[in-house]
Length: 80
Image 1 (cartoon, rainbow, N blue to C red):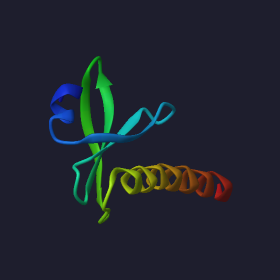
Image 2 (cartoon, one colour):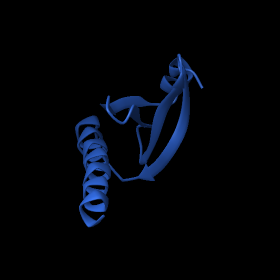
Image 3 (cartoon, rainbow, N blue to C red):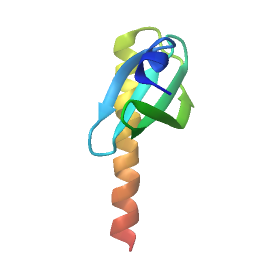
Image 4 (cartoon, rainbow, N blue to C red):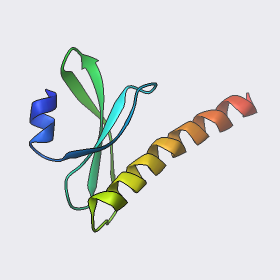
């Protein structure tokens, strides 16, 4: 899916260059995580829900989701 199509259905509230993802909030409770698979071609890699009332809260929860992924990776590699 192209970035333009993705943005027809929501707002980018977080991004991470190292993981190559953007988190898009639909304005309600749904967050979709997209990863660039090719030039301007994205694929949905994760979806989560969190009831939020504004874009500031959406941004905070999206950043927390990204941080949680880093924490999980750190825990995995420390245990190995």
